[in-house]
Length: 518
Image (cartoon, rainbow, N blue to C red; front, side, top):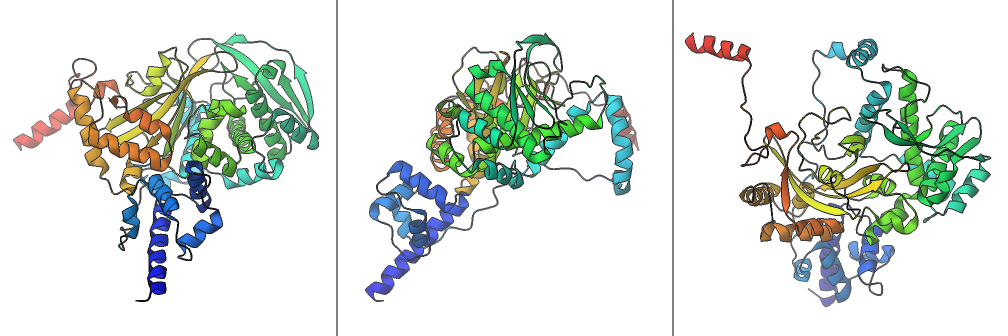
């Protein structure tokens, strides 16, 4: 083989391996270019040069190969081995968000459901807003929290400007013909949707066809001011400013419920308002944090959930935006108020929850990071690796939580996390073995314990590949076994001291006695 042919063959295998690694980890050429430049600005390649490398038209320099090896946690010698790994396994979690077969099918026809659902909701005391939030959450999870139509609508207005300043958002509102009015209104106490009264503040509202009313208190907080104004810009763009939406409220009443709706039963307008609130909220996030530049920003910040403090973005916006822009799809987030009432939740990985219909169940597992943060006064982000047991199903999660205050001054906890099993599978690591190692260590420690060395190295490697810094932070701390219900605690040493006896229903006992005597 001539020297020229050998060089082409070498370039082909190098390019193929780099492309395989990139695709396996859901990175675009632009993502990989940004990651390389972060490590070494001088040696980092352009998107076009990376493309030529992947297509075998260029051979990377020794330094660039070292950078790519560092990103994907490979030895440089691996790239010269002329053998390709098997294609990556489908890394969707085995028990991702899914439905169940509904039989007989005719009972679940559209016509019958339209009749039955309102009565079902009325009998259970479920409001239209609560039902809408369940439907919206299911829609988010089915779509992996990615809505390109809303993204495009926001980008057409904001021109992908990032970061975008308060004055820029006001300029957009002016160009759209919106009339901004200010009002004075301090916090008041309102029980609303919670068990006890909370500080409540009406932040802003829209008055058709073109007036936006902003609480003067927002002037003290540019991040929230930007979001509320962007939210109303979304209403003007998406719904022509018809005014059919709820006011933006912090505290007692969650947005999505009409201020004039007092009935506890289902109301079709509540469902419409909740959906519009979601649409406008997503639009606002996409306007303030456009996908490509924000994805690059998060990469530079290693996905720290408080990264928005640097550019006047709320932590809530940053947290909710992560699943929409990250190349890694297996995210979840919670926004919880004491003692554990959810205001928002997203489960792109099907994480079992210690909550019922947006409310706390009677015996939640208190070892979840979000509950631990609710009981602390710290305002610093905290990372946690958790083994989640739900029956025979075992999951491995890492999350970062932070205690914050809403615009009305109420404390709450924001939590963003990832399912680690798909990332382990993508690196040809058996997640079951890793989880068993960590769980065994936790059980020896009574439920929480340091992560064994081998598993810790795996998680540190995953942290570097995904570029999520708080995975490595969590791996350096004790891991914890968590579950959905304390009464079904899976720990060797039950967290309640002694597991309650599991009694069979008497009907089952009678059936088994009859069968055994037959």
